[in-house]
Image (cartoon, rainbow, N blue to C red):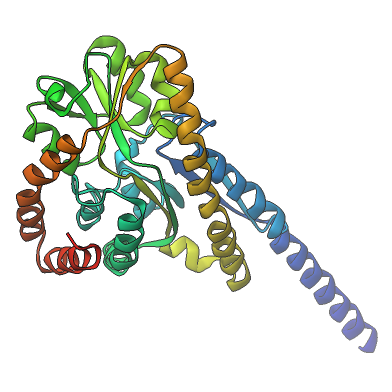
Length: 330
């Protein structure tokens, strides 16, 4: 009887050890998707850094496979939904405005025209943004932004007046309003669709930073007028259920890694801005600086839209816009 108990205890010990080994061997595997269509872009490089560091610093407990825009059959304008549904567990969500409408406040044309304005607005907006994402079962764990999105085209574009008649790719409903205000025709395309759109004439131009689309589409464009209606920012988001299933230690490591990498994204994008602009000018692109008159006209024409936009979005948007305008003195 004693030998039976010893044998049984040994068996339980072996099974327990086997379970422990099996359990640790099964790492959690996530998929991540970015709106960025090229691995050379800072946002994509940052996401790759996140995935590599997560695998290393969690000792393989969390593995994240990341996919560039167009690599999977998910539109980049639906990254929010893909993460909410758990199709992707992590998203680099730059085209979120159709799904998180209040986030469009950050891209109201001609409202935030300096990085100082943007930084102030981001701090004010984060509680509203987090609340909107949370209602979809999504958690925000980081974010970054590009330099000002300026106008580019294959056709003559040397002033605000030259937007008239141009078919411009836009990244938000708010940019669409800007294009219409000045006689252009807005078109919503994912970043992966822009090259073919330019080649076929579906669009004649885009709004982007030099360190963003200028870096990968510059050879397809001939003019850049450095008037920008807004900045472009992206949020790093995770599926809340998937995130909650991670161990507390892995959650902390993931958030810390993202918090460490995001400033690098922004810093790198700004460092590359002048370099890319100069390189495109050297290749023969016609680059024209925005005039003070056009900047003033743009703000004057779009200011009524800020108020009507907020009223359509509801009380939270009205409140947030009021706070931002008071904080930046506009």
